[in-house]
Image (cartoon, rainbow over all chains, first blue to last red; front, side, top):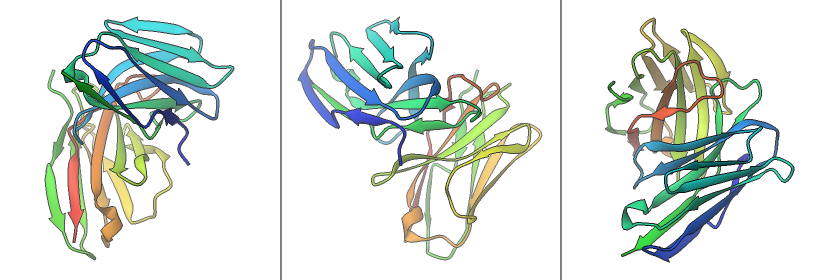
Length: 112
Length: 113
């Protein structure tokens, strides 16, 4: 089964609003990463947060990690129509090399 | 630097045939991973190669195989294709495969009829 579970599965907001996506996972991790995918194309890396970090920012993105609850959240502030995409969390497990375990993803629609 | 490239981008095959997909990683990257993406199962890890050796393998049947060449380019092969193998196959590369960002290619969309 998938390591990560994402919530919500779909999210529809207006431009300028904030979007929050949540991810839960099951086992201990090295790090957790967030990726974006537009219309079935390749994935684009957004941000990586290590297991010893609690919060990280990159531009309009803010990621939090709570290892005690095995959960993470991705906040996109001041969203734009161009942010419309699917967002996936992926966990990098101990001693698993380059293997990433992906969640099912959140489909974000930002309406102009 | 050029990104990860995958060929072909689209492919149509019939059941029972075999297919080979190719992935060229970013220059200097030695780890190449393959993923299958379907609407039902989502993104699933197939295998990872590092320095021409398979270092990790997902839960896929033996019909799925791969290899990596000395220049880090990788190929994956699927034999005896089934309808359920229709998917987007994504390749990703990074420097060494540990605790690092993965850089994904655009994918190969395979349709099995």
